[in-house]
Length: 88
Image: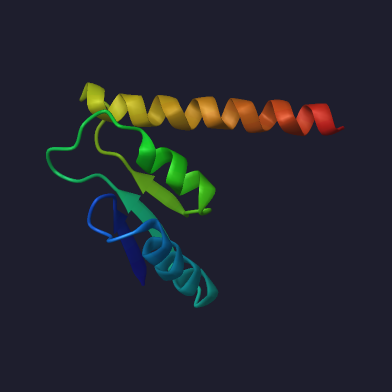
């Protein structure tokens, strides 16, 4: 079972958080998905990491708006790695 989260199709962040937490407690896979006509906004990448989503489906990398999301995930990953290294 999969819970697909599309930014802009959930009323509030609080509602989104509730749905995600409930799904995670029930062992449901959480996936943040791109919406048609989406821009290069990287909010989906940030929210996917913040909520501990299992996956993000940002679309094919042949479209620049999608590359921005993947680049954001790389920057987040680098930042988290640096923080872990500093804690050691």
